[in-house]
Image (tube, rainbow over the protein chains, first blue to last red):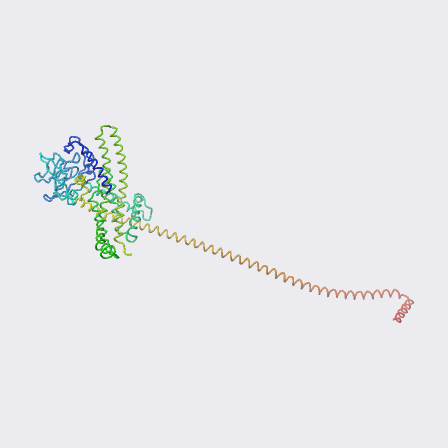
Amino acid sequence: MLALFVSLGVVGYAQHEDAHQPAEHAEKHDGGHEEEFDLTNEALAHIANANAIHVFGDVFIPLPAILYAPDHGWTTFLTSKLDAHHHGNGSKAIDHYVIKHGVIHRIADERFPYGEVAIDGFEHGVIEKDGEEKEVAYALADGHKYLLDEKTTLDGGMLGGGTTSYYDFSISKGVVTMFLVLLLAFWLFRAVAKGYERNEGKAPSGVQSLLEPVILFIRDEVAIPFIGKDKYQKYFPYLLSVFFFILGLNLIGQFPLAGNVTGNFSFTMVLAIVTGLYVNSQGNKHYWSHILWMPGVPGILKVLILTPVEILGVFIKPFTLMLRLFANIAAGHIVLVAFVGLIFIFGHSGESMVGAGAGTVMAFLLSMFMMAIELLVAFVQAFVFTLLTASYFGAATEEAH
Amino acid sequence: METIFLSGFSVFRPEPGMIFWALVFFLTFWFMISKFAFKPIANALRTREQSIQDALDEAKKARAEVQNMKSENEKLLAQAAQERAVILREAKEMKEQIVSEAQNKAKEEAQKIIASAKTEIDSQKNAAIAEVRNNVGGLAIEIAEQVLRKQLGSDAEQKSFVQKLVDNAKLN
């Protein structure tokens, strides 16, 4: 978490730099003139999920959009129809849906017509809502400003989201990334499994020998020490699934074009919830008795302190799993984008070529360094998640001694 | 700071769409890869390790057997050496005994032979002495006969001789 806030500090600092720029910064993206480089939004957009994959310039790989608005029903189309170009901003609306910064938004205004409608651009503004200032965006069409809704999120407004006029179930960039990892992993592990059938009783060969040490490491250093020699087999496939799914997504997230999935709260939440449910469903009598009625402790202490703390612990354990993975990966990506963004900052503000060149070299070196760290973090976080999951399984299935 | 966090930081908000798809893909990953890859791999690893363990155990057993045989051989060798030493000692003792017995016997025999030779020699000597005595007697008679013949060749001489004998006999 610390790394996350430090990295946000970096981004926030860049934001302050931008704030000193003149007022035309108030983005009116009509595509014509050169805009200021906004590192904060760039960084946040890079780690965010998107409804189209930005290749370069105005080239986007369209993705299927699956949208649900309670007052209009289901809408599906390919995001190429929204005509995204500069900065991922579209010039068309379909049934109130527009694309801004590669993300689908909905025009909540009932006066706006359904069907395919041309959009002139987007505008940002600030409104007061419940005594708090909130940044909002408008779509510009036939001389009117229409307020844009963001997709519904389940935070109840606590994290700036909340229930809005639509839900987004699209095959987004993150979903495509997960699908790719699933396919890759399936292909890879089938090859390995076939290798074991072919080389039965022989030394491993090829991709088998690449993955076998990893699998053995998870088994001998994680599963067996934490769960025990006689019980680990039941949970071993789950541990391997968690490890390789996270590792695969972490690693693929290092590539340009691929989505940031493990740095997405929704994803780590699912992993944490599934893990939490699975672990607690395996809890034996010993485990539950230690949580609800710890033996050997005076009754009053149990009621007042121990039992509430232990019950909280049941929820805190998966919660920390969720936060740790998310924060590490998201922070890494933000810092990396910030470093890469330095190149553009120097490029834009560079009156002297020497300064811009030196800045670019520095930013390049910093980015390389950060990428190396991120590669390490990709393995470490997958390992830590697996290790803690194994320790929770171990605690849940431990027999009384 | 807060506004940035709230407006742009969309990855921090749980989205129903992403949650749905993440659940679908994670459960699919777990189910498919566990069933078709991780279980066979884990089983294969276990079987292989078992076979390696078996082979190691067998090698250990074989080595122990060889060791056993070796020590047995050594024991046998030591026993043989000991037996040889005993046999040699016994043979030596027996030899000495035989030699001393033979010596004793030879001594006895020699004594006996010497004794019998002595008696033989004594008896031979006595016989020879007796014979010599006899021979000397006969010879003396013969000589006496011849002497007598020669001396008593004439009657006168005979008479004188007889006279002499008679004289001698008288004297005696």
